[in-house]
Length: 543
Image (tube, rainbow, N blue to C red; front, side, top):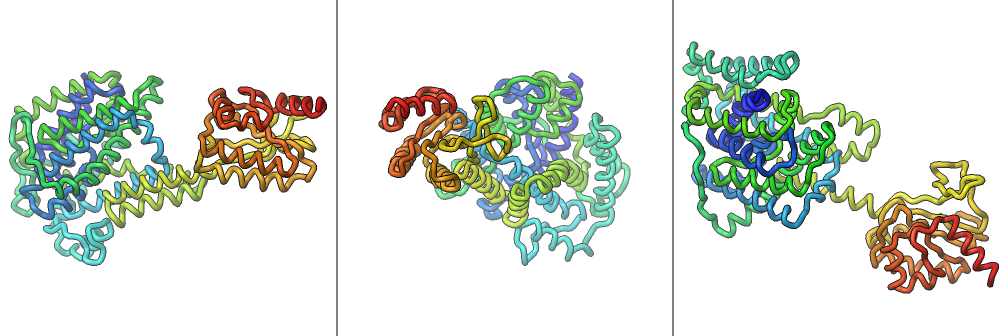
């Protein structure tokens, strides 16, 4: 109960703020939060994760759907609903095909850079509200990008409304102090209430401080959007695909974080269904795209939330607010909503992680910076795809160029270990032992063959046996098997035998089917390197 009320106190102001961020009426943020909480209550597998509107999804939705709508505000709201439903459909299809594993192809370094870039991009979208500048147009030289908004704000600083800026900065200061000294308190809601009181007892509205205005009361009703044209629907598909990826990545990251913290099991595929159900509910209920919120999930955890019943409490609180308390938010200053967004997204910038990437791996740091710059230069929509493409390129690069070792024997034992890790190990004069730290398949087969032959060439010319240790290669596909057949032929032409150690039963069956097992004197499942060498010597001596 306490956790649910505490989280609801954060959902209300953030829902209003993120609806503004998505260029939608404020009540849609509450609708989305209510319906997402109900859907996740029945479909989710995490005990702490809270699903609802997030800043990154809101701004990606606004930029992506806004470009399709082309400035037509009448069609924008309908297209948002269609896009939200498409996100839900994509998630359900992914669940049906059990594609939850795909999220693991998006590397942590890409997510670190993307999150930081998204935070800066989102902050830039709030500058006009924070400074009270009338237009939110972008800079002529940079377009609708982070740099364009910074440029536009810089050249229009003289138009700043001092009262608006003062209220917004005061809100930021109070939120930062609250996070530092009262982390479990509903700081955002307290700042919202204080700002409403301030606007009610002063004439700041007459001095140019914009307010949210009237928010209609009542619960969300079923909303069936008009079906857009085929061309418009086609334009929405990549937007929805990017939103789906971001929604699921945000959610599963939070799910895995709290599952590890509290040591319980979750289901990545079931989370796809939960994400789909939450977005379908939000779409048909007049809300917008939702996903797992790390900040609200952390708040739930800190407040003592231990089961999904927290979602039920959040839903009840939101129902009460929508039915009876919407009038309270009429005088809420828009600059306070900007302050809430700005402070909320600062948590997306993980400076310690970026610094660690720089220290540990310059290549990973470069990938993170590429994702960050991609978001800042081409926007959130293409920034998502930049991140996904970078992740796939990293994954492809790693599997196509796997780590390989020449193995040596530990003295007076039958154990063979990597020579570059254990230099004390020794090689056997007439035997070359080789291992690949990856699965063998068509994409890395040629690289492995070239590497093995190059390493073999560095040894003395009296090598008579090559032992390929498959202990770390539990699967071998047909393309790799063909490579191994050609390798066996090449080595045989040089008078060198090829044998396999540590092969799984499925790999042995493949080798027998292709005839490779016969050519190499037979392959015994999971036979050790030492036993392979001994069997080879016995065969040589008997012949």
